[in-house]
Length: 339
Ligand code: KG4
Ligand code: ZN
Image (cartoon, rainbow, N blue to C red):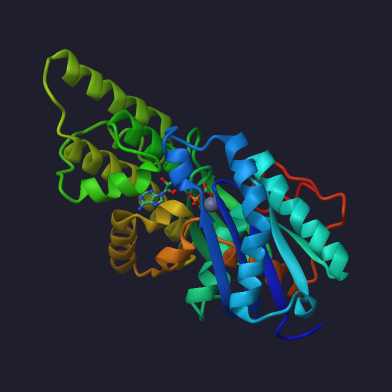
């Protein structure tokens, strides 16, 4: 096997069509075609519309990734594609394109777990990063703390009991009248507000990771203010929600680090772009002697560079490639292969 394999990564799990080319540990290209503007008018991702847009975007995006990397299809050594978790119709577009390309080129295809890839994105920027380490998983569909014991050994050791943190950001944003995707909007507005509203009593629920109750508490608060004929201070609502949501996750990560003795922590998933999460995790890391890494902003939300990195590690670790029967799956846990 080549030491510096050239890998094409493909990602279509939600509303970003992305393709990237990786050579060894050097990222040659990472093209992302976002559908955010298309879905914004509906207030969230419409699965059928997402699939149709992936269909029109996928081949031009792959061609652009190869072209800007200066790599010919025939030079590729392997392809990696997200097969779960995500929207099945959206995933299927990437999976079908990847299967066709891998078959036509006679190269192996790696079935990549989307959340493992979010964690693996850190290998691109944190060059010295090696397992064991913990990952604060903060995306639109998954939330918790994962433990990485080897390049291909992932396990989730703490998970939300209900909603994901990104889902809560998006739902709260919608409740206060902010556009989709709500996370970046709340992040922006929270900077001008005070975290003065106590939505839940965290002392009572110190160890629990749960976002559904917090989201309901924000909605109830907004209704109560409205019923009194008053106007809520949206910036304060955003700052208070964001502080509670992030503190809950960072506290969980710090207590997991102390309990396991694993002192390296990375952030992973779209919400790791949140400025308060980055600030809080960095500050708590310094306080408790943890080494903390964040992916660069461009690699926090969905992208194919992280898929290519994960596929490279699966290939170098001797994990069996997928066959042409590979299918898309909507639910997939970390460390769990559905194939
Ligand atoms: O990881 P991701 O791109 O997709 C999934 O795998 O789910 O995460 C998307 C989530 C959305 O909920 C979005 O609102 C949130 O990440 N997000 C943020 C920020 N940027 C993206 N949440 C809070 N603050 C941000 N700056
Ligand atoms: Zn994601």
